[in-house]
Length: 130
Image (tube, rainbow, N blue to C red; front, side, top):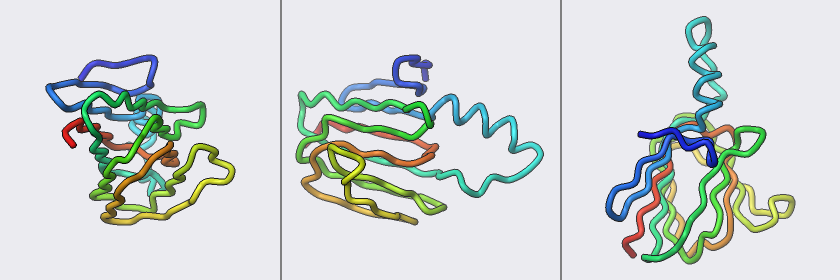
């Protein structure tokens, strides 16, 4: 995986897949503190977004190292292996967005707009195969 400074993630692209791991800044901060203590507030897992070919989904870390996923249109969203409470906002305006709390697995269909996953560290996979 190659670091991508624009998004704040490590990034890999292959065929119909884009894979983001991170955010890098959060991963580095966790690595520095994990040696001395376990931080149970960090979210692990996978967010998989299936979209039709040609959609340009943007994944980036914001200034709070929250994960922002935008430009989503009629996607399937699969959340897997989340071991702590993942706070997920769905909507174009995060102040009035639907806020969900996910532990374990979740599946959403026909999602459009943007997401914010608070303090998520894990893998975001964009599959353009619908």
